[in-house]
Amino acid sequence: MTNEKFKGAIAALAATFGRVVEPAMLKGYEIGLSDLTDAQLSFATTRALRESKFMPTPKELRDYVEGPTRITPAMQWAHVRRTMDTLDIYDSPDFGEVANAVVHTLGGWKVLCEKSIPDLVWIQKDFERLYAEYSAKDLSGLRTEGHVGEFGKAPAWCALEGTPRPPKQLETAERHRALGVVRDLAEAKS
Image 1 (cartoon, rainbow, N blue to C red):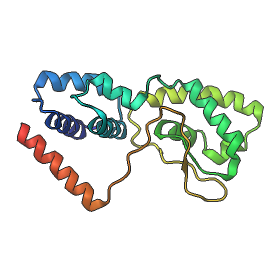
Image 2 (cartoon, one colour):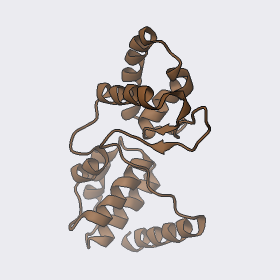
Image 3 (tube, helix red, strand yellow):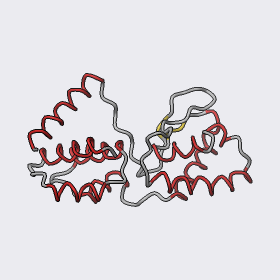
Image 4 (spheres, rainbow, N blue to C red):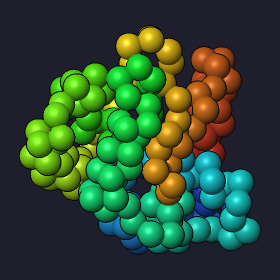
């Protein structure tokens, strides 16, 4: 999570909910949210602005990202395996950032789909290790986009329940306008 995006998100939340950002408050949010990626923080902030009545705590923001139960590496692997059996090499799945990064690291969707069942037993160990590792770190520099199957269709969202769906990308002009509003709010509060 980048410092600028983090401060902008907390400033936007505080301004919306009529709170003053104190240094200790900012430090508490930083400690509680430091392992989230920029996309996860953006997702949590968007949900909080849409769904919360009061300024969310770091735990509440995490719950927006993680859901009521934390997805374990074994749960995610089981979902990827079911999807492999259902969609096979021909369709294009999007499992969410972390699982996508792991599948890309392991060779990609097509490579996994072509593996034998005995090979997949060993790949499961690598998948679970990488999933745990990637869940706790910034994913910048890794491929996190969905996977394209043999038919070349755009990836369809088929992530495990509780996986944060990436926020809809704003058009460039809207994005610049939104960033300007957040920047103005942050400057007004500092």
